[in-house]
Image: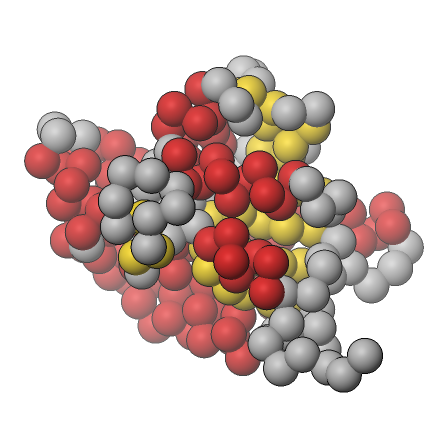
Length: 213
């Protein structure tokens, strides 16, 4: 079978966008779903508080798109984690733990959920700067732990985060998704999502619900 040019199978750390991106990539041992505003951040904070979050219940209500990507990831048989800016370093440590437990080189797909341009998960995907930064933060944290065989796509996301880390608060409040939440009076929620490495909780999908890893 000839190599597919876009599946990033040559690399340990891979990166793409949405359900189509997940399907495009070669199968991975670990899939990290990144939907910073608001799916990944909200579930991370809930798990940090000791709560489980059902994928087809509360999680779906938080973000149709993020939940849809997580659902598709769960059907792959991979370990599914949720990542965001708040828990990027914690996610990287969890991935390293998984690799140690497997005692084998572990492939990681970091999937930025993006935002649907409409109100249904099958709407055309819109670029979301917050998810680019969240994915890049996780790739950067993985590299800091020595998991640094990254695809060009993952490396570009990483460098975007490194270069813009000092402006994360401004970027999240100024970007489209942040502006939408600010208009709803949710500025504190956006600023909470912009707090890099403020959380140590890592949600993992088990039996249809996200619980603490």
